[in-house]
Length: 210
Image (cartoon, rainbow, N blue to C red; front, top):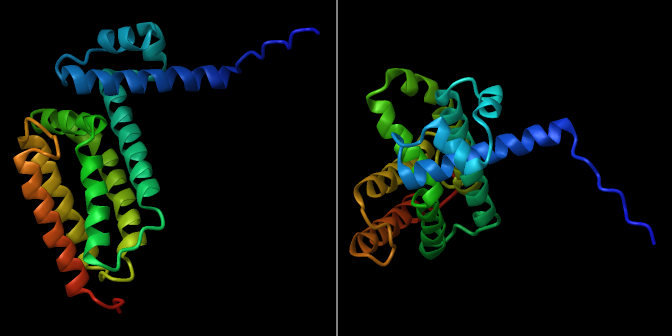
């Protein structure tokens, strides 16, 4: 028997692989080291890629960070959508379960990249402006998921407000909690808060919105 020839990757596949490695390396650096220590040299060392290769795909450190934010947002929303796909949202327990999945997504290690970048953007007007499209993309993606889940229950005016309420609460927890362990005391408080929100959604909007 003759060995099957090894198929060489195309240039597009190699490019995609390099970009993917750089984005994942940036996620790891932001999560483990923080914004200030996430240099292009650190990212390249993590990814096993030369700085020349990095700058061929991302002309600046800021461009790499913004691309990483978009990458994490799209991946996390897709994971949340997959987790809640086909989920029932008719009872308080069912809605609370969906909100618990959202809590897990917000507190996930990869979502730490967003927190690092948002804190840095407060003192960096250029980064803040560069991140705006990624933030708008994330908001649009989350609204799409929320509409799929609750579009027949919440009104068009209230849907963004309810989403903002729960996401901002969870973001606030993530910023303030040193230990995101759901079993920790603050976690139990949030669990109760999410259940109260689930009760609001179910009981305030018991029928299909006009």
